[in-house]
Amino acid sequence: MVEVKNIFADIASSVNQEQFLTLFENGTIKVERIVSHTYESPEQFWYDQPETEWVMVVRGAATLEFSGGKLVEMKEGDHVTIPSHVKHRVHHTSPQTIWLAVHVKG
Image 1: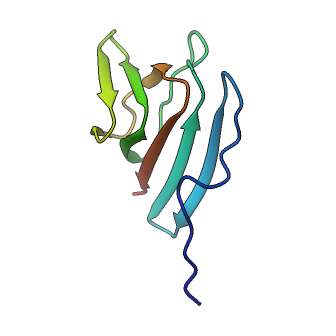
Image 2: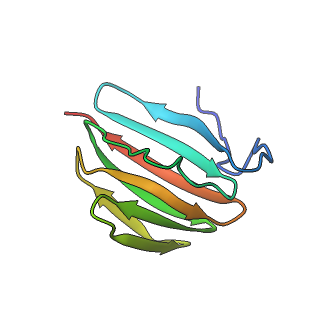
């Protein structure tokens, strides 16, 4: 059965938090919607993921920080590929930033 869903549906309005929703997943790929509400990763927190991640800002704006201090500004439509085990964190997002993230396992 084919069911149409909307990436903008069911977004909670929480300040300073992130909301994760898996849109699709199989043995190799996970696609998720992430909603960031004026979010910053906690100090000294770094994502260090075993899989490669492709991420795009669908709505809003964000700044990613990579270990070593590099800041990457992103606006609507911008996307980056983050190789596995590249440490990164969310430096800051606009009030309601919607991301599309694809995690490629293996």
